[in-house]
Every structure is written in C-alpha cells, then in structure tokens.
Length: 627
Image (tube, rainbow, N blue to C red; front, side):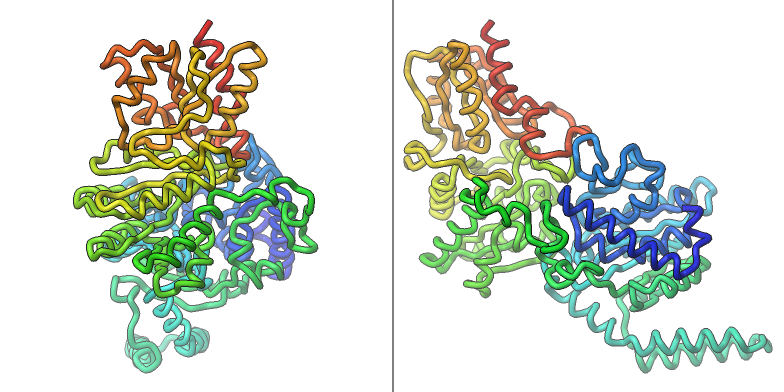
C-alpha cells in the first residue's frame, strides 16, 4: 500500500489492468463474484491512495466487491488471493480476522452506512481523527436500513463519507423510484462540470477579501439553482458531489482528496460499469454477478461446456421450483410471485417474462416483500415470496407480525436452505427451522425431489390459513422414487424404506436424502440395516404418528440440515422424553454456533462432511450410538 501512494497515474492505471487480470483468472478457477468486483477496481485503488488504512475505516456494503481491496492488502492476509473461497483460503467477503484493513464484516446488503457511522462515532468519542468511508451500491440503497442510517448521519453531522457506486444494478437490474431518481441526478451532470471548472478557475484568482469570496459562493449557488434544483442527500444534511466517472483514477483521487478536507457528511456519486474490462461480464453483468468456474477465453461455464457431465442431466431444486410455479400460474390467475432483487437466483426469470404483471421485484427490501405479500393475501390472492434462507432473517418480524399473527396464507420459497458452499458463514441457510418452528400458525415443508416440490407447492396453494415455508437446498434433485409421488398427509412424512424388522430408523429432512442413502449403504456393509423416513413436514406434526414411530425402534436418529438448537430433532427428542418412548433418540444437525470461517468455505459436499452430515459422518454416529 505504501508503494501505491508513490505511483504515477500511469502506473496506477497499469496496476488496475493487472488487478483485473488477477480477479478474472482467480474467479474463473474458483468461482465467485466477478462483475461487481471488476466495476470498482479504479475506485479501490483511489481509496487506498488517498486514505490511511487501517486507521481510516472502509466498509464495503454487501462486501462482494472487495477482491481488489484484498489484492492490495495481500501481504497482511493469511493466504494468497488464489485461495479465494476455498477451504482454509480467503473468504469472498471482508473479514476482520483476515486483515486489520477489513474494518467490518459484511455479507448482507444495506449495512455499510450504519456500520461506518458507528465506527466514526466511536473514533470521535475516544478522541480520534480517523475517517470512515461507506461504499454502497445503488442496489443496496433500496434497503430501508440504509435510509435510517443516512437520516441519523445527517443529524449527527460527523464527517462520514458515503460513496454511492451507481452501476444501475444490484444483482438484477434495479427497479423502482430510486433507480429513476439516480438517473435524474446523473442527467444533471452539467452543473458538476461547471462546478469543477469554476472551482479550478477560482483557485487561480488571488484572494481579494471576504466580499469576493461571498460573491463566489452566491454565484455557485445561483448556477446550482438553475441546473440542480432538488437533491435528497442535501436535504438530509449531506454535501453532494457527483455524478462523476468511476473509472478515472486521477479524477477519483482529486475528488477524494478534496472531500477528505471537509468536516461534514458527504455523498460522492460515482457512475461505474459492472464487469468493466472483461467483455463477457460487461455485456451480460447479470450472468457474471456470481459465477462458478469458467473459461476466460470463451466465457462459457466449464460445467456447461462439458457435454458428458452427469450433473447436466439433473435439475436443481431452484429449477424445479421455477418450473412448478410457472405451471401452476398458468392454471391459477391468483398466483403472484415476489422477490427481493433476486429474480434470476430464485428461478423467477421465466415467470417474470410470461406473467410480468403478476411478478414483483421489490429491490433489496425483504421486509417490504413480506408485508406487501401479506396485503395481497388479505385480498384473496396467492402470493409466493422467493427469498434465500439467509436473507429471510431480515424479515422475521414481518413474517410473525404481518403473516402468522393474521393467519394469512403467504407462501415462502426459501432457496439455499441449509449449508451453502463458498460464500462463507454469512450465507448459510441454517436458522430458518429454529426461527420459524416456534412461530404459531406456521407450516414448514422440506421437499426431497422435484415431485415433492410439486406436491408441496400444490398443497401450499390450496391452504387457506397461515403462512407456509418450503425450504430447499442449493443442490440438484435426486432421481425420483415411488415414495416421492405419494400424496401429502398433514403432519406426516413418508417411508422411503420400511422393512418392519429393523432396529434403527433414520428420519431426515428432504435435502439430505442422498446423504442418508449413502449412510444406509455404508451401514449395510457392516450388517446394520436401517429404515428411512422422509419427514416432509417440520411443522405441524402429527405427534401421535411420530410417537408411534419412536416406540417401534431401539434408535431413531433425526437428521436435519439446519442448526441443532431449536430444530426439529430437539423437538422430537423432547417429545420422546415426555411420552417415555421406547426408542433412544439421536439428533444430527449443525452444532449450535456460527460456522468458523475456514469451515464455511468450500463446496456444499465439503461442508456436509465437516458437519458430519454426509454418508460417512451419519453412519459413524449411528455405529457409535448402537455400540
């Protein structure tokens, strides 16, 4: 970083090209967030040039654009950048335990302004003079938390620097009033051009007294009144600079140096291009937001370019949901879908194309998505809210207060439930079971296959009272078996294998079907036969039926892809104890703590193994329990 402060502008531009090359190379091998990182390379270099890290604090909103920052601070990190998102490698998001230059852990959207303001206030309370910089995209600025923080920052009048990285996108293209407003600000660039030229000219004129200074200020205000009538940020108490080009290192350094001298909150509005410098990502930033491994030359996913790969014949749970909801909507005009800036990721792109008036992308605003859906349900429609499990955490109050309390039949399709590879501990979908099993009037379903996804969506769409969660993993659907096509019975699961003579039963959530089958095969090799019970329902439960099962075996093992505390297994074990069931109960789930960073990276299969939820881990636990 010290060398960076001595480089010429030409050398800095060359550095930007090298950083882009390194990002593309590493992400092509490891997967990761590509387009967002390519869009902030010049900004990152300018920030490191002007500010003094780690004394000054930079907070990256979401954090998925921190790759250039990690490259520039590589000497302080425990592993090279080439290990990004790999086990025991670098995380794909800022981590305080990786570097003192990572001032705040991020992974979810809209938190940066609040965090940076807190860091700045703490510094001033302790007599410091450091600066705090929040970098937030126009997509994350659709989240309500960002506005709460802006309001507070304007009130405190601390010298917070907010950099608005405006690339007209979050993950999907931005929608709504904010996007239109920022576009209107961008169209008023004539004032900014005048202001820069006027300031440069004024600096060359010798100072001739206060009267001349006052004249300069009044003239600037008069011109601003012509070109630039309204500004939301100014009304909140911020100075506003912009919009300026976000890929001009020299201009960025100049603006940041000027802003650094201000002693009041300021918003710097940058226009950047997502995917900058890599043609495929510039042309299609949606597809190159989060990617798996790919060919740098062709831009085609390695998995897609393999014509013989077995996984190409399989359908993911996301695709199963996508196909099923689209088919259902063709028959039922009351079905409405809602997502929070994740149209593609949740599988709703096809629905949006076929039924644009019945599809709503509300931006990064999960709380609004839930209560908006509750309003639709109150009027007799059938809203389906598709959100990742890790992001539904932001809307817990709305689910409890606005749907469950009123018994409104809102359907929540929780994608990425359970263990999620590569993105670290912030993106694990481990808490939805324990959070919502305790919620009255709630139904929780776990499909094991595409057929079960269809059955559960049909069941949910027919339900007249109370919210329904359908949780499913980021994984491929298994091959169908007859059991997966059997109709649902409220509160009961389905037998995948039931010989009636075995002493051990494995009762599992649907996402772990493959792992349970693997465990059964390993156990059979050691002459231990087990019956397999697919739970289907995690709430409500036919307790009489479950108690009967727990009286028929010596050991019933409950296996779920979620946190153990407050999960289904603990509930079932408590039920067995209460009714003095004959079976010993064993609960296998993720232990009651956040995953350590080095144990939260890697593939889903690797994470299952680490948490003893793969075939070997399950079979080992069963053998220990029965011997």
